[in-house]
Each structure stands twice: as C-alpha cells, then as structure tokens.
Image (cartoon, rainbow, N blue to C red; front, top):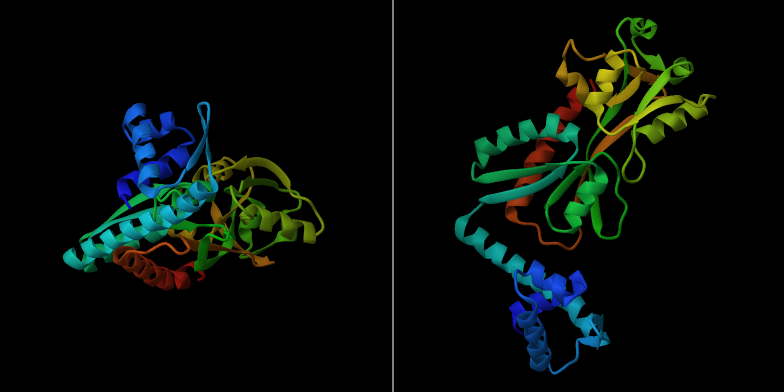
Length: 303
C-alpha cells in the first residue's frame, strides 16, 4: 500500500473535503482528486460516495480510515525507534503543563536532564487542562502535567505528587495570627477562586468543604491563573487557596500562607499520556527524571 496516498486519504477524511485537504497538504485540488482516484484503483475499492461536492465515506472507507491511522502510527513509531537506536537518547520532548508545574517542577527537571542527558531538548506549552488534552490528542505534545484527574478511555493518568492546599490571606488579616485555619473561620470572607477547565478542581473541593461546614462561600471573583489571584489577595480583595508549592516563592510581595487544619484539603499534579501510543526512549527518560524530582519535592511541599 502506498503510504503517501494513504496519508492523503486520511487527510481528506479529517478535513472533510478535497479543497480543505489540499490546503493542509500544500497541494492544489485537481492533483489530490486524481491521487484519491488512483488510490481507489490501486485497492480496487470505492472509498467515498461522491454526492455533488460532498464526500461520504463508504463502509470500506471507514474500515481503511481506522486501520490506516494505525498503520501510519506504526510507520512513524518505527522510524522513531530507528532514530533512537542509531543516535541514542537524543531529541525533543514536547510537554504541556500547568503554571505551577512550570514554576516549581520543571526547573529542577531541566537541571537534572542537563547534567545526566544533555541531548534532550524540552519544548513546553503552558495552559489549562482542556488545552493540554487537545494538544495531546492532536499529537502536538507527548506528555501532559495537569492539576485535575482526567478520566477518559484514551488517556492514561498517574499521580505525580500530592500536596496540601494553603490559604492565602491579605496583609494584617486577623487570621494571620493563627498557625492553622479551620474552614469554618472563613464564613464571612470574600473568596477568590479559579475556574476548572475540565473535571473537578481546587474550587470544587473548597466549595464542598464550606458547605459541609454549614455555609456557602461568598465568591466575588472567578479567575484562571494563581499568581494574578495572589496579587488580588495582596490588595485585600479577598482570600484564595493555593497548592503548597507556592510557599517556595518565599517573596515579601506575596500574601501570608497558612495551612488548613479542618478539613485538610489536598490537590494533585497528574501525568497524562495517550493510551496505546508509542512512547519514545526520550519521553520515558524525561518522565523518569520528572518522577524522581517530584518524589524529592513532595516532602518539601508537605512540610
């Protein structure tokens, strides 16, 4: 089977038309139409029902699309394995991660990589869980590090580290005098919470804990990033909750951070990868180093 023609066929299916596929393949429309016709002749099957300008996959076309994706993936993975065998551990790891992972985990990971495996280049895309999932499923990244637990048939999830949530308080707040805080102490506070792009997250746990303590939190702000929210706390706009890793910033420009005693709320960083997708030796090495770093940092975050 001609793999180039197979790739063009799959592109037509995914783009939905010859015109869009030609653009994606950097071709003009007539040669692509001819190529698909020749591919059908080569296989002696009809892949599309042609209804005017629209294309509809035949049952044979549906079968070939599914098997063709597997075949191209196998071809790509074989090429990657060959490169690894020939060159050893070298190449690029494409990673999608949250801000906290980029701030507190990756600097130590990169330091260890540069010392032990200097031929690995790390390419990072930072964003929320929905964005990272989209990038992972479109094969634009190899690995994701997210703050939420992803439950999907095509995704493998494993916990990288677990850390307590801390309460961020404005300067001179009366609760700053306490070594630890009960959630019930926050009944009359203004809450600054971050939205969760996928599944449940920190805000959901905080709201549930408040409700169990007999009150509904007064949420005056919904955000997406932790650092801007901390700046708002410094301006006495309200209180917020952050993972323990943020105490490593140790900056006088950040709010006072206090542990929660009742209940103790925790948050996790999780590694997500695509199931049944070949993982290169480079990615495996990157993951191993990341897990080593996270294990050492867990004791610091939980101190």
